[in-house]
Amino acid sequence: MSVIDALNTISQGWSESRSGGMLVNPNAGGGIIDVAIVSGEWFIIFNDDREAMEGFDTRDDAIEAFAIASRVEA
Image (tube, rainbow, N blue to C red):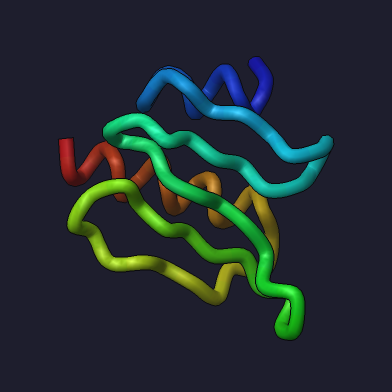
């Protein structure tokens, strides 16, 4: 299963800017998973009232945190 497929099980509509790059979903339950240029740390911005999360070493860490946060909120 691809990263996009896995994220789409949480909320449909995920796309990737490029392989290994930013992930976005404008739909409810989606958000942005991207990397900060200066620090190189990955962050999450949710499309709802959850606070942004930051400081992830890898994209996979940020994706996992997004999935966990989405299960808790569901």
